[in-house]
Image 1 (cartoon, rainbow, N blue to C red):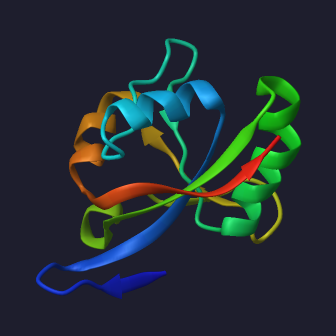
Image 2 (tube, rainbow, N blue to C red):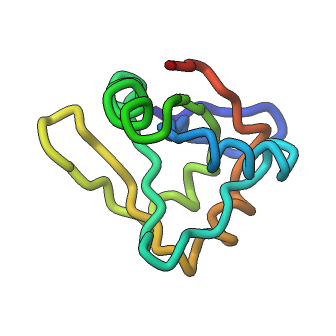
Amino acid sequence: MSRQRSGRGATTTLWRPTGPEELALVRESQWRAWPPRLPEQPIFYPVLNEAYAVKIARDWNVKHDGAGFVTRFEVDAEFLRRYPVRQAGGETILELWVPAEELDDFNAHIVGPIEVVHEFR
């Protein structure tokens, strides 16, 4: 979903299910950036569907981390065109795969703060 922001180009709303450790690092960035990937994490994958993010946070993050959070954030839509939408399962299970080495550039194109919109324990 793209929308026009006053004084800026169009943005796309993305969601990211996350656990407490990653969320703490986002908080340290003043809610402006995602932390670098760990060596075993070659991609950063925000999702295009809030319901899918809720399912991961509730069903996976809570089980593995004790808590799960869904974040929402806006990214410059023109910039996102470089990342094809990946269907990771059913037709609403859509992700973008951002290579770990491109995460700094991705973070530079986030518009506004990263917001927590759901919390599960």
